[in-house]
Image (cartoon, rainbow, N blue to C red):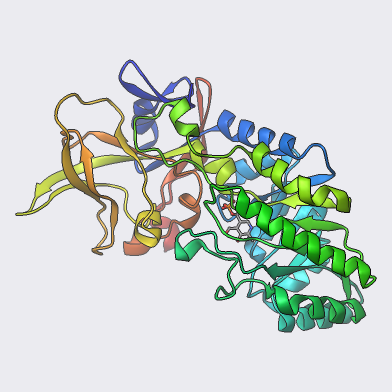
Amino acid sequence: MSKLHYQNEKLFCEETEIKNLTEKYGTPLYVYSKNMIKNKFKTTDEAFSSVDHTICFAMKANSNMEILKLMASMGAGGDVVSGGELYLALKAGIPANKIVYASVGKTDEEIKFGIESGILAFNVESEPELEVVNQIALQMGKKAPVAIRINPNIDVHGHPYISTGKSINKFGIDIDFAFDVFLKAHKMEGINIVGVHCHIGSQILDTEYFAASAKKLFDFVTRLTEAGIEVEHIDIGGGLGVHYPDVIPDYAEEQKGVPPPSELSKKVLEILKPLNKEIIFEPGRSIIGEAAALITKVLYVKRSRDTKFIVVDAGMNDLIRPCLYEAYHQIVPLNKIEGELEKADVVGPICETGDFLAKGRMLPDVKRGDYLAVMTTGAYGYSLACNYNSRPRAAEVWINGENDELIREREKVEDWV
Ligand SMILES: Cc1ncc(COP(=O)(O)O)c(C=O)c1O
């Protein structure tokens, strides 16, 4: 049974009725299944157990401190993209030597912080960045651990805003130039080459793309070895997709069309295992995406000449994915409502036409005061939330069986003055 499921017509997270949480914590509210997060991490970790590996949780997907602490306790490393994320990872107890740091725009201060902290690798994304990392390391009398991020020019055919592995994307160094950059890095006094990195995109449901990327990595690392450059690890990035269901949640349904991490690891390891390097995998969405729902209250139901609008108390500041990526999130009532479905737009209170959670969605006859759950919002939900329209960010709770625990307080306007 799914961790988020209906029981007697009421939506539950594990053994906890979500409606009760709205009374305790208010809305908008992110509700996570702690056990689902644990299981997802465990199955991902196990999928790579036949090789030396580290699962570096991509913190951009979710950087809640309690969730990070849970990751740390299960042996996860961290994939960070800013000094802020590095700070949180260390505070959560993720060992520095399990942290990889990507970003096309690392500042000098962030580079210093990474070197001082003793991270596993900077995933360097350009030649100018490599030069700056080298200079800073030399000034500090240290060697910076570097993995160069290669851009393999693989089109994963997803939404253009989450494609990262094509030559038109800003990420990494074009695979055709990257070899020369490695040769250059190899001669730099302040650089210690430790790995090769590659990340081709997000919400990828066809593991053939990962195999294609692994083949390119295999050829690249083989060429490096022939040139006398030995890397210690191969970082295959993240990007495994999840199912964004369009029916009432049901475990079998949830899994439809989504390859398990074992399928990904099988395809990738078939190719990379002979190289005998540590494998780093950087999943974000596939660990945390399905583990949460955003709970929101219906404020008004209004009709224009053409459209029925369900106005709710969660806006694009709480969940920007529908507006930013045209992402589809299933929306279901906390208490099942019988009767005809009708097409409606579910919109937030923000003063933007782009502030919607769903458009033209078939929904039951919800009324003011009803609660809705916006499903599969554990990844890139809260982490992309902001204060636009001076709206405090939502609270977060997680559920362990029948127990709920607040893992982030609702922000207060008073905090800002
Ligand atoms: C370098 C890198 N690694 C890992 C990830 C995590 O991707 P996902 O959440 O799709 O697994 C991202 C996402 O953008 C990324 O840019």
